[in-house]
Image 1 (cartoon, rainbow over the protein chains, first blue to last red):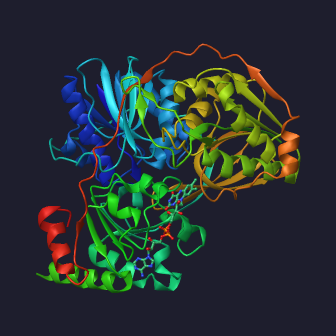
Image 2: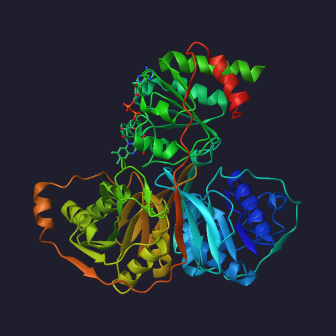
Image 3: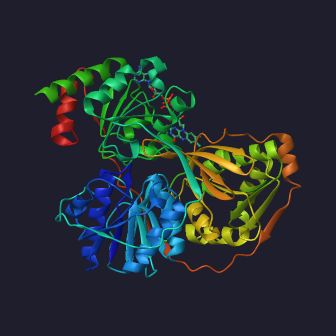
Length: 318
Length: 246
Ligand SMILES: Cc1cc2nc3c(=O)[nH]c(=O)nc-3n(C[C@H](O)[C@H](O)[C@H](O)COP(=O)(O)OP(=O)(O)OC[C@H]3O[C@@H](n4cnc5c(N)ncnc54)[C@H](O)[C@@H]3O)c2cc1C
């Protein structure tokens, strides 16, 4: 059986979780087995999880699960995996997933691969791919242990409505007492976080001044995109740190990455070169970023970006 | 405070990524190695700051062969008191974490630090594995850590925000940007590092569950399509009709 952990934030499921369920269901098909989704704690829309391919949906409820403690969550998941006889456990490659994956590998004495980006291949053993060297290469891992744990990179496979809604079954497993006391959770509502964003508008030092970001916000606004930036811009405090993308920032793989006034240094490319389509706006035709771009505009961003915003507005209105 | 910082060696960020031996091994020919930036800039420096404020020792630990000694000495030059190298090829995250846990299990460290990930395998697994093996709480992607006696207040990155938590007692943490500011070793530090202890110890046996069997470079990008800066309508058309992303 393939066990998928249906991660939720503040009781809400996000697209990444639906992707993971579809991934789990397709992996189960390959292995000729079934896929069960496991929900820890209370969340809205649990009934819907079956739609993405889980043939069973189970829920563990406990006061110990109301806030996040990786030790408690990992123990609960491992207990459930053992109880249900799971052979493959799949979680989101989110900050939550990342803090659980290693713990699960140790607890279940399982081989683990973090951030897988494709379905397993079963030709010779159990093999999965993941990006390594900050997106500059792909590695194929073979997992040899009986139980396997994987975290799925966001935007790697689209969620598919491949099943039907199923009822929720309660699961009783031991949930230990947390040692981590969560004091505060601050999230910005209404903005898709960078690792999950399908459309990203990014800007760098070519912006000259933090006061010039209005045109970037406007472009992102009409597209419904999330904003990002290069490292020097975050280091200088022009933009918040969580917007910093690249080798030492957030690694992203959106469908569309628009970069304005970013030279395309190797460390910047490392975090964004997995984007499906890259548009580069730069006044220097020799900027290295053009070599990694699908579409390029050689021009002054202060003229090009507002024109692009207008063109998108016109397109959306048509 | 007794602090342990896990440091790893990674190719420099500008290193050419290539593979040998039928695409099964990283080609290290001509590659410069550095200390993994998250380990050096954030984990190690925050540990040193805590020691400077409250006293104690900072030990750095690395799993690797003697080629890694340059990177380890750099950690000592930045300010760590002593170093431990577990003399083995760091085959996988599981292998590395089990080695470090085996070393740390009877030493009562107050905090074990790792970087949030290495820039070569981007696995983000070692910290979480060590925490489980030591049966300790774990906070990933920490951006702030303040101590009040033996009670820690830690902020961590979560999707689209921040979470603040409190832990009383020992824990493991993975360091992200914001936790500290990079320190450049000075001449005195470099000289002192030569005299600080670097203990080499043998590895323990660990089962290997997940191994890399092949590497591949992504296909080369087709050459860029240049669009007239006065014709953004054309760019929008291409993004919609050709690239199908809007
Ligand atoms: C260990 C290490 C890790 C690093 N990690 C990262 C990382 O994670 N992410 C990252 O981004 N960087 C990283 N860097 C830094 C990286 O090397 C570059 O310095 C950085 O990406 C450059 O940022 P930039 O492109 O915004 O600025 P610049 O390189 O200064 O480029 C600005 C660009 O704007 C263009 N421009 C200027 N004015 C205009 C205009 N009016 N219209 C159009 N274009 C204009 C210029 O032609 C230029 O190409 C790292 C460096 C090191 C050493």
